[in-house]
Length: 431
Figure 1 (cartoon, one colour):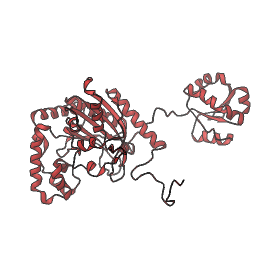
Figure 2 (cartoon, rainbow, N blue to C red; figure 1 turned 180 degrees about the vertical axis):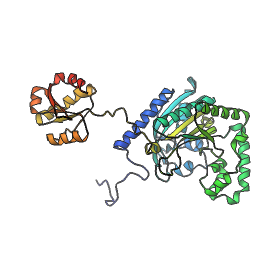
Figure 3 (tube, rainbow, N blue to C red; figure 1 turned 120 degrees about the vertical axis):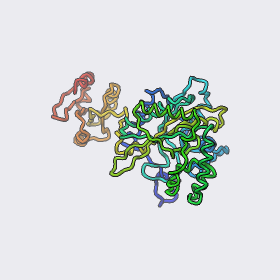
Figure 4 (tube, rainbow, N blue to C red; figure 1 turned 30 degrees about the vertical axis):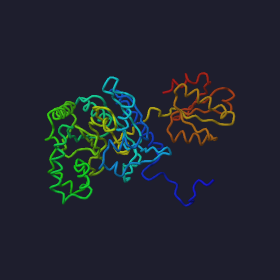
C-alpha cells in the first residue's frame, strides 16, 4: 500500500501547526508546571475539557460578527451527523462542564485552571499559530469584585515568575444588561454619523456587533474611535461600584493599570470588567506585546443553554508567545534533573547487566546519562566530557564478573572500584 500517492509532495505538518520537541517541549512543560504551582497556591483546581465540542457551544457564546465564528473555526460533521468544532478557546467549554456536572450545587465560587491546545484558522505569523496553547484561570459562581482581582493577581504572578518584564494592564468596564443597551445605542448613533468613512468590514460589524468596531485594526476606524463615546460614562450605579472596587484592589496590590475606553475584547460573552495584559518586547524599539487577556462573563451560562446566569471571571494567557519571548526564563520541568553520573558499559557481559544497574540508580533517584547503544570506551567518555558530567561510572567485563563498578572523577581522572552493594552509599559521599 502506498502511503504517499504523490511522491513529489512534501511531507509536512499542516500550515500554522508544528511539532514540539526537545528544548521547546521542555520550555512549554516548565511553564505549565510553574503556572500550575501558582494557580494551586491561590486555590484553583485542574480541569481538562475535550478538544472537540458541539459547534453550537461556540456559535451561541462567542457571537456573530467575530472573526472566530465568521472565518476561524475548524468544524466537522461526524458520520452520525453531529456538528463538532475544534475548540477555539477554553471558556465556553468550561462553562458547559460547570453546568453539565452540576457544579452550581457545590460551594461557590468554583475556581479552576486549564491548559491545552486551541485551534483557529487564522493567518499564521510570528508567535501566532493555528494550533496554539493557552493557560486559563477562572472563578465561577460569584459576582464579587475581589474575584476579578484574584484572577488578575494570580495570572500576573504567573507571568512575573516566567520572567515577564514591566507588565502593564489595560482595563475597562463594558457594563451589564442594565446599562449596556444605552451605551450600544449611543455608539451605533455615533458610527452612523461616520458611516461614509467606515471600511466595509466595520460597516458589517455595525449591523451585527457594534462593540467590535472599537476593537478594529483598520487605520481609518482607529481615528474615528478616538472620539467614540466611552462605556464607563454609561455604567449603572452597581457596575460603577464594581469597577471602582476592582481598580482599588489593583492599586492596593501596586498593579499598574490604564483605563482604555476602547477596550471591549472581541468575544460577545464579556460583561463588566475586560482587560488585556502587555509586557515589554526586549527587541530594539519593540512595542509592548499582548500576552494575556480576560474579563467577566456573567451571562455566558444562559447563552449556551443553561437555566440561569452564572457570574464568572477568567484570565487567559497565550503560552506560545510567552515561551518564544526573549525574557522567558526557560523554566525547567521537574522531571529534568542535571545528571551527576555518566554510565559507561563495555563488552557483551556488561551490556547484558547494564539495565539492572541503571534500575538500582533510578530507584535511588540518582540522575544519570547513558549511551547504551555505543560500544567503545572512547566514544562514551567523549560524550560524558561534552555534557560536562562530573563522574563516570564504568562497567566492563571484569566488573560484570566481580559485581563491581569503577567510579571515575572526570575532573582529575582519579577512580575507585566499588562493589555494587556499596555503590549507593559511595555515591552519597560524592560532592
